Image (tube, rainbow, N blue to C red; front, top):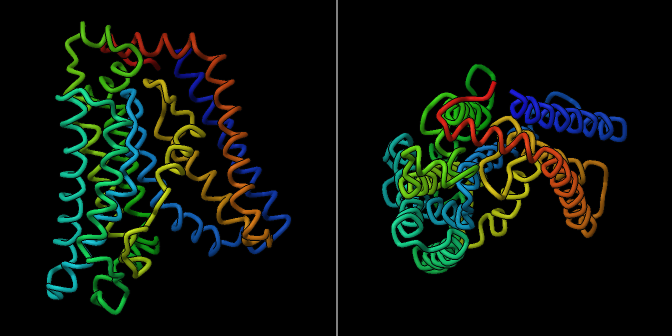
Length: 334
């Protein structure tokens, strides 16, 4: 109970910080808090929402996946090439293909991490380069633009569901899926147990290898979905798509309270961490901050948030350990 209260307190504090940030920016540039602008921020941040959750489940097991953005780029390029070669192919088929390809790339990571014993950071650093190189070779170094894609391929990310942009709707569905997985299934509790106390988890009969394989495959599937959505939304596919984005994803996880040491994190916290970065990135141009300063300011904000998170995590260490022990025993803290 105390561990859950601690995590909820962190999420509440981060939510207040995000709200205060939006209000402060709104005072400086009222256009930023208009409904259209805020919907635009959420739409732009949809990819970060989904990929942060994908990265979170890997980190929960004391791993990390540096290849998610490269996975996105490769799958996005393949989807664009397939659309050009088969213009009559239904969009749902392309989406399913993207998810399956992403899952396959993630499963490759997971298999070597889980069953060969390669450290996740080493494995995914290697596949980051492999997938980027494969993206270049797949298109022979060429860029694909909207002229190479069918109207239906490009139109899907611009659709709305009951007035809600479909990218936001998809991000909500993905978030609900992760919420159910992590908070209401034995498999999800096992992920926390593995990260919080691997020895205890093993004694409880939780298979670390299968957990590692699962989380990397899941992260790959989400990356594959984002690959199609990213390319179709922006109408361009090339080798450097989302290059360096994996660092932003990891930063969103840490800001949201996901412990790099494993076993700690919540879906709400991860989403708030992503929203925090989304607001910062979208606000800087609105308040006329020079592009030369935007990267520096974004980095400084991330660093400050990470330092605050680290201090909070240190103070709450005993509560977190208690939560991990409860989860390792199959119980749930409330």
